[in-house]
Image (tube, rainbow, N blue to C red; front, side, top):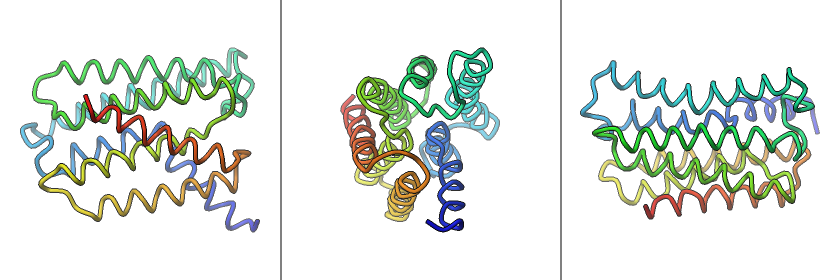
Length: 206
């Protein structure tokens, strides 16, 4: 594999880190979708988005950093199944908290609540699979986003095939990147996609 291929694979792996995906999707709903958060003013939109970033990105990432510094895990990159056990549990708590808070707030659109529930279920699935093998977190996150946009595109009056196409392309690129620069097998990638797709499909029913 060429150095250029590895560079782009690493670049995509960082840009589409699993912790970032929920913030990307919520940023789309809050700032780009014409009606999902139309009743919110600019300040409230920003506040809600920062809530997502704080609970779904910063706090889980900071918790992993502390675990690493305190020697509870060997690597901040969570290279082994053992290293991932506690971070998964921490992420589950924060993602459940985010979903629970948002579903109890007034005027939050149902589509956002569905997605946040699906994100929580995806982490639960990842933690369960981690008992047996190191499933791809990137694939789970991208599969979750892909299924969300697929379901959303068939239920939203303002849906655009462009959004679904972009997410489908990004999913393919990220999964390919993980095969290039990680020790994941094709099974880890495909099963991660399956867990991500299934999590959003289940959440959509509620």
